[in-house]
Image (cartoon, rainbow, N blue to C red; front, side, top):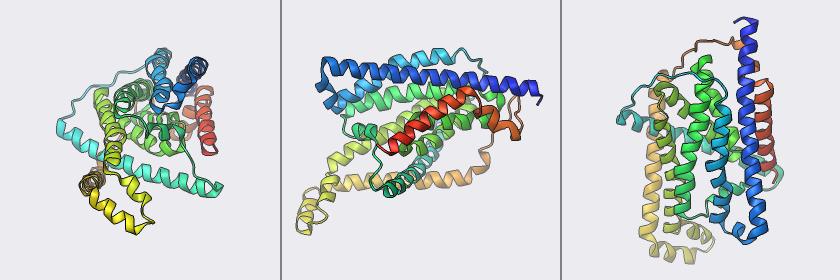
Length: 329
């Protein structure tokens, strides 16, 4: 690759990173403005988890991210050939996706637990804590409908379309990195990164964003609606609070035997899907191949061209700072 082509590639990634950084500033600005306005008009709204999440997230999905998309569209894109994915292939891919998410979530929780032990107190995540206490309807709207559509369009289709000319592997990896960083906390970075890579691979191979949008929706539905509903329905948390009082826990379990049985059957099903997904990942490992693009960046220059430019540095540094701040809240 000639020096002039390297400069052009670096400029391309810089402009792309800059658009994502400016979009990030728009998201942050509109969220802050909305919260300040609510504090002035009706501060009690922020005491309700449902209203707080809606006021923080809804403007992002319906105002900020569409504006972010307009900025990203100023960067030239490439066309990805569309290929059909059968229902059976999608189901197998989902099982692998779920295994990837489950394992990386364990790793992410382990890392944050170790960091919490080192600093002497647990690492908290305010957004996750708020999200775990919201109603199923709000969770369906925000986590299952709006989030997958907006995030897949921004971090899969729009991002990969503008990077795939430099190779499928480059596009998939960058999609995972930027998607992981965008979550702004270490708790979610691990599984958001691996999911981003997996979804990115599906998109570059099919060219159809609907497959990853639907997969993202199902993952979020199981994690933020089904799991929480079953957790509340079963009374599992109350049972755990009684672990130190054996005389009370046995009657409690007998009174909630049906609910707890349903909850544990669900956990067994999740474990079964995860194990099946791991097996499928191992069996199909050789199929996870990516192809070079029309412009190939030499390996020795790849990191500096993609990440060591003004736009990408601004985006990455901003979100890394957010992650560090979250660790010490």
